[in-house]
Amino acid sequence: MKLDGLVSGLKTEELIKALMDVSAIPKTLITNKITDRNTVISNLQSLNTSLQDLVTKAKTAASATSLASFTATSSSDTVTVTAGSTAMAFSTSVVIDAVATAHSVVTAAAGSTAWGGTFTVAGVDGDPVEITPSGTGAQDLANAINNSKAGVTATVVPAGSDADGKPLSRIQLTSNETGEAGEFTLHRGTAADVAAGTSTDLGAQPGAAVVAQGADARIRLFAGTAAEQTLTSASNTISVGQGIDITVTKAGADPVTVSVARDAKKQTATAEAFVKEIASLLTRIDNGSKATVGAVGETTTLGVFTGDSTVRTLRGALANAVQHPVDGVSPSTIGISISDKGVLTFDAEKFAAALAEDPESTQELFSAVSSRLEAVTTQYSDKYEGLLTTRITGQEEEVKTLKVQVERWDVRLEQRRATLERTYAQLEVQLSKLESQSSWLTSQLAGLSTKES
Image (cartoon, rainbow, N blue to C red; front, side, top):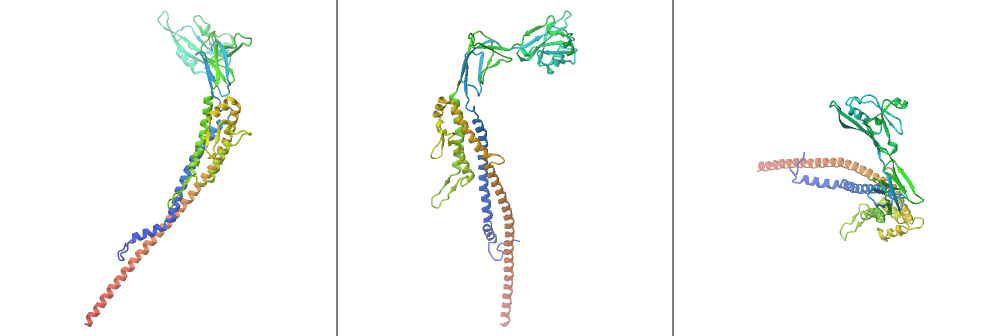
């Protein structure tokens, strides 16, 4: 029951609120601490995510071919050159004697009921595949062939009409793979009939034909010299050097020049992008660790990472991984350096010059630095045992503990409010009683005065 100043005239509710505000100060401090911790946790989680992303990129950069980038060219549009990560600078001429073709056969024309029974596709290599269509039509056989694992594709081709005007059809079969190994034959009969020589080769019947003979691609290197060399491939892609493939589309007697050269611009851009990502991470840590000291009477603002020893040691470990020498050679020799103010920079011109002078050593140094960065980022961001991960977990546990304290303070404050409300209610009741007694005494005294007079 609330009796807000009913007798005393006091603003009881305001008094209780003021007293409760004072009592709630410890809870407010804890709540503010939870807010601060959640802000820190959010920033640490974001930093950890960036580190985990950097782990993957550092692992890639640490490979022995992370800077591999080449420009591949051909003197003819009938030849395409592809350079992989293991390629080296290269130039040669090739003569395309033949391109790879898929073996293709077309059967003789036959009526709509001539395609039933058992058929066998026999390849040059591999076991023969028996095929039994569900019906006697050409499309039934084509569907059965296409649904099998015979390695060929069948298509029904209209072939006019017979003397009675009934439609005729052929079936064209084409190997799914190019090259000599894709050659096949289609037989009417079982695999046993094929083995016994008693089956009928549909491609050898009158009116049938081999549309295209399966053949390998064939090129010549160093044509016309004592070192002339022939290379073949079941596909139209042929390896002509370490990590270098060419794809041919047309045969020709004229030599085609293929060249592979290092792409220095791409190599430098790759290294620069990686180093800039690290520099951005270091700057992010620095900005989050700053403390802005206010003027006299003003508040000093702390960064989200200010005073965090884990983040501070992470920053130092990243900087050391980038700037410490590798086998006595400083990363600054290839343009990767940290200034006296701790700012990581990348000198593209210096890196390009180092690549031009000694590409292998530059790659080794870059890979070694990247490997150290991979180790550091893994140590801190590992999802189970990472130092930063553990730090985040610790902060989350602290927040859980603080929330329990807030819940306890809620109970305590409710009890405090109830006590204050009872106290002030009792005060009003007692004052009311005293007022009643005062009025009774006054009336009694007034009665006595009247009698005496």
